[in-house]
Image (cartoon, rainbow, N blue to C red; front, top):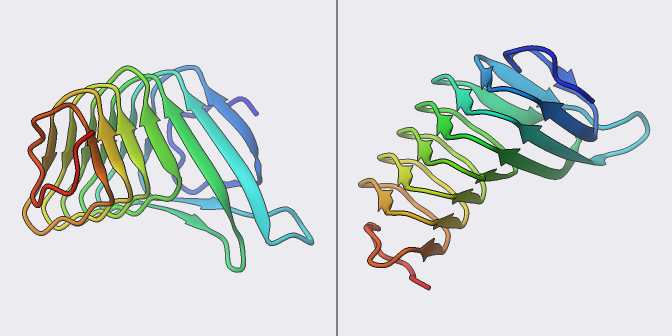
Amino acid sequence: FDINYSDFGGKVLVPGDYTALAAIDLGSTLTLECAPETTTGEWSFTIGGAFTTSADSTIQFSDGCSGTVDWDVIGAIALGARSTSIGSMQSIAGAITVGAASTCDDIEAFAALTVGTDASTGTIKAGGAITVGTGATTGVCTGSCPLTCVPLVGCS
């Protein structure tokens, strides 16, 4: 599916492959809804620019739905403070910033990766420096050494 809008906010999307040729934002809530008669799905997003979420924004499954979500972003990824997202996010040519008190799954940055204070992530990986703020929790931390991880949980 071609994405021909600049904000995911308020959208309800069924499983599928979604492509945006340019940057896109999330200003409120994006709901991923399973197809009728199913409880699981697969979503794949390819974004040709940056992906930015506003503070307090949410990416969520509809009630009773679950699945696999992959985000491939050409530019930088910036998750706003207190935002919630689902799925693996990869910045192919940019940095990733996870805002304070935000929650996300696995993230991988081509460049630097910053996880804000009190944020929670899955596995983190970066081609550049990794900085994890006070009170943040992450999965395994891999990438360039030396890492700036608090606490340092791994380096490969």
